[in-house]
Length: 157
Ligand SMILES: Nc1ncnc2c1ncn2[C@@H]1O[C@H](COP(=O)(O)OP(=O)(O)OP(=O)(O)O)[C@@H](O)[C@H]1O
Image (cartoon, rainbow, N blue to C red; front, side):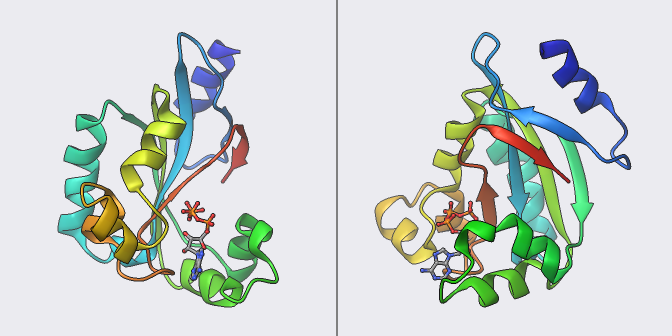
């Protein structure tokens, strides 16, 4: 399984990649991280996240790709929230411009990245978890700058 994972990671970024996240090998995991459109428009913030926050927290970027989603792509990705009052706002936002998709690797990468990005709401993050990325960079409940996959499973982009 590990060699399959590594093979997937080594494919060129232009190719469609399918990786099984969260497979443990000596606690090694892969996780999907999104640096959402609001952050993408702030190159100095992106630079700080990529070059400082991620490596300093024991995570390694194995794939980095700029993506642009249609509304349908965003609706598919966030399907679990369909029907909620913020669904249209959320999917309009994710399809409003380009953003970065990263595959991060490291021990306990899934929970480590989720912990690093912090609570969904940046205002709450600034009060209760001021050290987190959403506290530093998040703007609003919708434009909260980051996504971290919450569970093991396949992701394709
Ligand atoms: N109450 C809300 N009002 C507005 N937007 C919301 C609200 N709750 C969630 N969202 C938006 O939907 C996204 C997905 O919500 P979820 O509950 O999965 O939070 P999360 O796991 O912290 O975020 P993400 O899935 O983006 O990592 C959030 O990142 C946020 O942009």
